[in-house]
Amino acid sequence: MLRLVLRAKGLGKVYRTPSGEVTALTGFDHTFEPGCVTAVVGPSGSGKSTLLNLLAGFDTPTSGEVWIGNDAVHALPERERSRLRLRRFGFVFQSFNLVAVLSAEQNVALPMGLAGIPSALRRRRATALLERFGLQHRADHLPHRLSGGERQRVALARALANDPDVVFADEPTGSLDSAAGSKVMDALAAVAAEGRIVVLVTHDPTLAGRAQERLRLHDGRLVEVGAPAVLDTRTSIAPHDVGAA
Amino acid sequence: MIGSLALTSLRRRPLRTFLTALGIAVAVGSTVIFLSLGEGMRRAFAQELRGLGPDLQVSFGPFDGTVFTAVPELPIRYVGTLEAEAERFGITSVTPILLYVRGSLATSTAFVFYGVPADMDPRSLYADFELIAGRSLDPTVPDALEAVIGEQAARRAGMTVGDALRLNPRASFEIVGVASATGGLLDNAILVPLPALQDAIGTTDRVSFLALDLRVPEQASRTAAQIAAAYPELGVQTRGDISSIFERGMQITDVVRLGISGIALIVGAIAVANTMLMSVFERTREFGVVRAVGARPRFLFGLVLIEALLLSLVGAAAGIVLGQVGAHVVNVLAFEVVGVEVAAVTPRLVAFAVAVAAAMGLLAGLLPAARAARIPIAVAVARE
Image 1 (cartoon, each protein chain N blue to C red):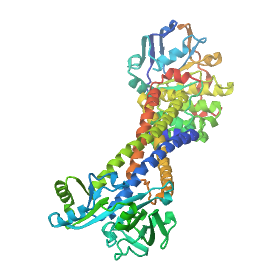
Image 2: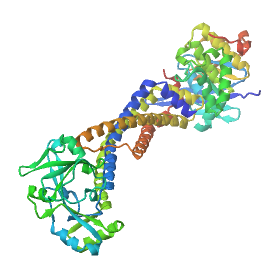
Image 3: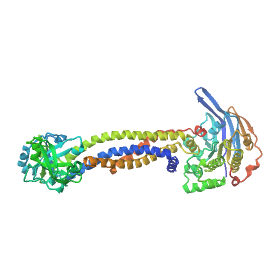
Image 4: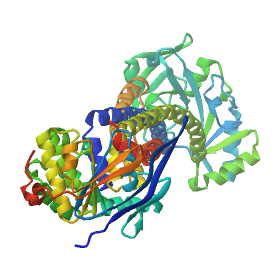
């Protein structure tokens, strides 16, 4: 399947605050390639989250451009950006961000429902995604009944619900122990191996070390682009091998 | 999708849903009880009008509350005047009626006396009149101190045939019969011979009104206009006129009751708005996530609005049940005191309550819904 690239050109963001302007990101240029996990690293306040917000269309840049294929994310009206997030992007957050009143299966089915997929089909696909991440027996459980690792894998299943081109993961292992975190990283690698772009924002050097590409930000600038690393052997595992954390 | 999500959200937060719905139920319930009073009075009056015999009622001046004053105003000579005009106006009978209210602080000893000719058939005044004990007034003794008492009045005062009913120091009537008129005014009235009542209250030349029967009742409005033109000092009313006088009075009380109900409804609306605002605030991250995975702002707007609407409708359903229970209690109490069921929860009242609750829910949900739709995704998903 032909996947698209995600490009940022001269991307910048300046926040206006009562005490003056704060430059969170400036002159960011990069092309994110399909089939690759790109880790964005840097200290707190370096602009990692701002970059992710701009790439994902959560926020509009002050300068520069973001393109996914032929779609100019930076210039789209909110309605079109919502459509883009629904069809082409998937998200995994540090604090899981599952909808508390929905079961695991309902959480996974949520983006499909928003996309207008019929109920029977979205149920079938949600079940398949939960199976992929070893959670079929937890389908009816509410998030608070799941462990941290399980919640994050439900979030990953939800991120894949509409077969996106890009998965954004913002500190996905930040709330997990190392074993559970490792499993989630395995899963992200497997997702990238399917030809998707995975943008991973992390503080964790171990996690960043397992990415194929590493971008280092400092004071809102891209200061280092790490050469693609040798593929971690664990990224080659088949998706169904990713078991419970 | 949006409906099931709203429903799930309400179901999974049962305590909040219950308490908010309870607030709405109390608001709608109190509204239903207040408004049911008007509905019940309308129903009781309509029932009364159905049983009302005379085609026309003639008073001195406009027919209004003054016919129930202690001093009657219509000179009795108009009986002869109208009887003389019977052929011209198509009148078949002219019956003088004297009303006298014996007031009392205790409702069990307050009565409405109807002074009527002893030889009058009560059915000409009240079609539903039925004697259930004793006998009618004796037509051979037109000024006898005897009375036929309505069933509810008898029950309320604890009286029966053979008891004495004291009007004032000059007159005490012996109860000779008990009548039923199926819940109408006569159930609470006391029929006594006209001359006896005139003597008792010292008014021998005046009555409260005249009841006229017509040869062609369908022409009552035209005949009323003819009599009023010939005798401008008289007020002539058909049954429809009386109904409209009552309806005007009811409309005034409707406004008052609606005003009181409005306060309860505003309190209910504030409860919904407060709950939904709190809910939006607490669920900022959840809404941010839903937006992040692709929902458009209007989806969240609709979601919050539907939740507010569902809450209001659930509250309205409970409120209507509450209102029915309340109206029943009011009726039990009112029947004991005045012998009439004054409250009724009618279909149009139920429809009104549902419509008001729905409008209340939508209005109360607007601000929280707009707020939910404006939540910035980046801020919401980062929130702990």
